[in-house]
Image (cartoon, rainbow, N blue to C red; front, side, top):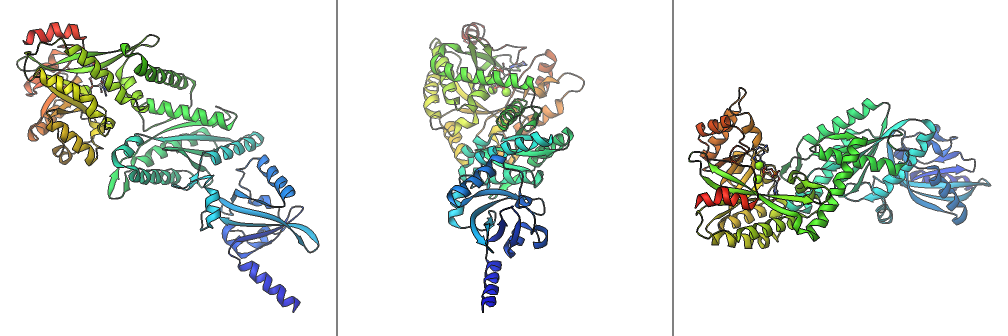
Length: 558
Ligand code: C2E
Ligand code: MG
Ligand code: MG
C-alpha cells in the first residue's frame, strides 16, 4: 500500500505540468520530472548528481545568486525571473519558485519553473511585465542592464570580449505620426524579429524604449562585430509587411566593445548610444563602432540642440531669413524666391539649416522653428509695396512631420493672408523622401492647402523613390530637381538624360520644374536647351538678406 502510494506520488510529480527539480544542500540535483526534461532538453542522467549551476546562463551577476540564497534563508522561499540555459545552448527566461523541504531525512530544495515563452499563469505574466516589453516580448531596459552587469563581472574573469549594440530605427516617429500607433507597433515587432534573425540565440536582444533596441553580442574577434553590423543593416533593407502595407525600415546602429570602450555596463551602453548617434549623423541606415572623434561631434550636436531649443524660446533675434531668387530661365526674369532660415548663435556662430533643421525635428521644435520663419518673413514683407509683380512666388520649406500638426494652419494662415494681399503666391516645399510616406490624412491636409491657393512643390526631387502612380495622386504642382543632378550638367559625364527624363515625367503630369543649384553658365545653357522653365542657383543669385533682395530683385520686377 505504502509502495503503491509512493508510485502514485511519483507519477503525479512526474506528470505535473511544471518543471520540478530537487536539489540537495551540497547543492546537487537529485531528481527532475518529465516537464523538466521537456523544458531544458536535458535527460535525467545528464543532470542528476550535477550542481544546479549546470543550467545557469551566465547572464546574472554573482550578487543575484547571493540575494537569492539569502532570501531563501530569511524568508523560506524565493520566487522570481531567472535566465537559464537549455541543453541546446539557448538562453531563456523562466519563472522559478524555490522552497526548502525535508527529503529522506535531509534538507533539500524544490525548484519549480516554467519557460516564460510558453503559456504561463496570469500572475507570472503580470510579474514578468517588470522585466519584459509586452509588445515584442523582449527583455526591457532594466533586465538588459542587469544582464550587462553580469556579463561584465563574468568577463572580467575570463577576459573574453563582447560588444553592446545600440539600435535605433530611423524616422520611426514619423511612422507613428503618419500611420498611427497600431501600424507603429507592427513595425516595432517586425524590427525585433529582424534583429533576432541576425544574432545568435545566445546573444541577448532587448527593447530599451520606443524605437531603441540593444544587443549583447559575444565576440571571438573584432571582425565578427563588423560582420554582425553588416548583416543587421542588410536585414533591415528588406521591406517589412505590416497589415497590407509594405514599409521600408532602416536602422542606425552603434557598437561599443568590452573592455576596449568601457569597463562597466552603463559606460558601454552609453558609448554604444553615442556611436549610434554618430551613425545617424553619418546619414542613418549604417553602423558605427565607438570612436573618440565621433563622440566629440556628438557632444557638440547635443550642445547645439540644447542651444537651439533655448534660442527658439527666448532669443528670436538670433533667427533671420535669407531669400534666394528663382528665375524664368528663358526670359531671365525673377519669378519668385525661396525663404531659407538662418540661425546665428552668439557662441556657435552661424549654424546651417542642414544642421539645425534635423535637430529641431528630433527635439519636436519644428513648429516653433516655422513660427520664427513666418514671424521674420511677415516683418520683412511689411515693406513691400502692394502692387509689386503679380503671381510672384514665395516658397517656404516645411517638414513632412508638420503636415499632420494641427498648428500648421495657424502658423501659415497669417502668412498666406499677407501674401494674397500683396498679390503674390505662397508655395510650400516638402522633400521627396518624406512625401513618400504621407498618409491619406496628410494628403487631405495638402489638398486643403492647395484649395486655399497654396502651391505645393516636391523638393530635392530624384533623391527619393516616388512612383509615377503616387506622384499622379499628389496635390503637387512643382518638382524641384535636386542639386546633385544639376551639378554635372554641361560636363562630359553629364546627367542630362536624367534631367531630361525628369522633365518628361513633369511634362506628362503637367507639373512645373525648378532646377536647383545652378552654378555655371554651361549648366544654365543645358537646362535652357532641355526646356526647363525655372531655376535657382549661385550663378544668378545667392540667398541674400531682405534689404538686398528687395533692391536687386524686387525693385527691378516692378
Ligand atoms: P533646400 O530647400 O533644397 O534649399 C536649397 C539649399 O541649396 C539652400 O541651402 C541654398 O542656400 C542652397 N543653394 C542654392 N543655390 C545653390 C547653388 O548654386 N549651389 C549650392 N552648392 N547650393 C545652393 P540652405 O539655405 O543651407 O538650406 C539647406 C536646407 O535646409 C534646405 O534645402 C531646406 O531643406 C532646409 N531649410 C532651410 N530653411 C528651412 C526652413 O525654414 N524650414 C525647413 N523645414 N527647412 C529649411
Ligand atoms: Mg527648399
Ligand atoms: Mg532642395
